[in-house]
Image (cartoon, rainbow, N blue to C red; front, top):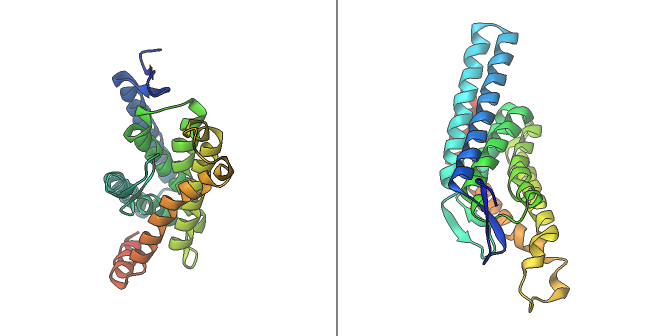
Length: 231
């Protein structure tokens, strides 16, 4: 079809070519550069060496969090047949950026993460551009909504739960609009209304439950409190 995207006839879907993957990686680098420039510009406007050091530290902490989130997304404790999986707390390390630094930083980091997720999984199976938007760009960028709970009591867990709920919402909308047409003919039509909801929230809430249990462990709470003080 083009040098970036090719049509896979047996799957009835599109996939990225090697050049396409390089193009997406290029877009990711551009997005990260824009985010860094934005941070530097904000630092210069505020002025002061203390503020400058603080924002540099924030950038480092955000980079480390994303560096943890992406490989953890490969640790699939339970993989679902039509996509999606329960991973080892990968979503938390994206949402923690928003909780630490607010919605702007949260959504910026989550958008970069959405591009990484697209390269990881979406590049090999695409139905259309809107499907890619719902399943990757919108769904994973929604994890930045945790930033609205910055500084609030119990904001870490509350922000995390809001973020994963919104991610599930976008996956569910994508399920209704695109994926239900690809279900087998023997699929019970009376389940079509609830299936995208049950399917998507099964793995998302499964991971959320596991993550919240881990976050409530005293050693984990102490470690996170210590890291938050450094911020």
